[in-house]
Length: 84
Image (cartoon, rainbow, N blue to C red; front, side, top):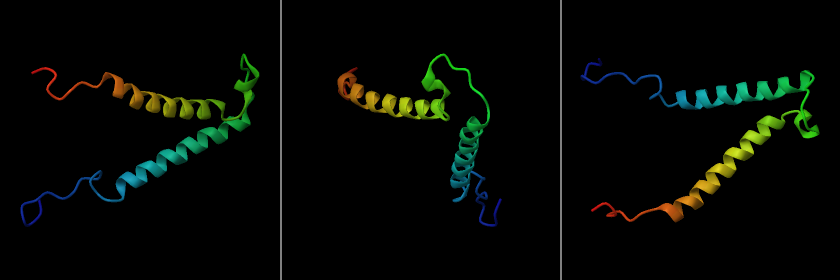
């Protein structure tokens, strides 16, 4: 507790903590994609052997999922007083 009775900010409440987590996650993801260049892959299809294929595929799939969900929301959305 501080002198004024408030508690000190926790580590996720500090301004630079979230940015540090994002940077660390980006670094780890970059290292994993970079490691994909250094081993032999045995995919069923030729495009699976492309370095970074699954990283690109996962990113594109996530973006498509978000875009489809925003359009689906327009169809499925109910009025605010739907259950009243």
